Image 1 (tube, rainbow, N blue to C red):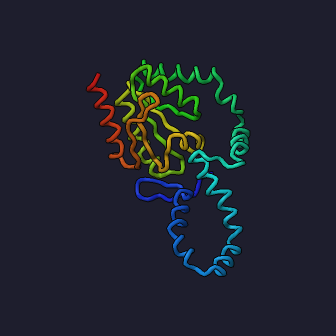
Image 2: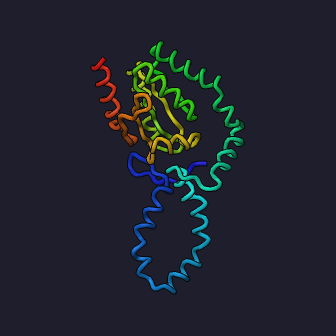
Length: 224
């Protein structure tokens, strides 16, 4: 299901990343209240706080690498719902086939955009980027993100113009662990990597956002 979000101009931000900031900003007002009043308010909103800890703050703990006690169970449940076990999603044969598909696309100068859905696939793409001395361009997106969908054809066109580099898309609904590992907080976000090293990043759903990516790729072309 789509996560609650706030879209501001060309970017979408999960509400789970905004609410803690709002609560922190209200802290001085809370501390100025008399202690008995704070106790009454706390008792009244305790069910809400429990819900926030279970939903909003548990997401933040996963995002910043501090899993809650039920994080592993939640991940297993998500894998079972998708009809695949963790071992199946990271099978060596599947990763080898994925790497071959990336290599064939580079050799054929197809300019294709590849879908990356697991940490193993991302690692394989990074390894190929290092081996071929080419850039790996990542588009972090989601189906419910309007700015992401609007910039999608421009990203595909950019991939066609630079077929000697690897272009990929990561659906954060399908692979939230990749969003967390790459430090992505807003959508859409684009990252350019050389192997495992990130060399550029830009966020926003307008075509000019891709200028940063173009500049990096053009500089790489001049250096060849």
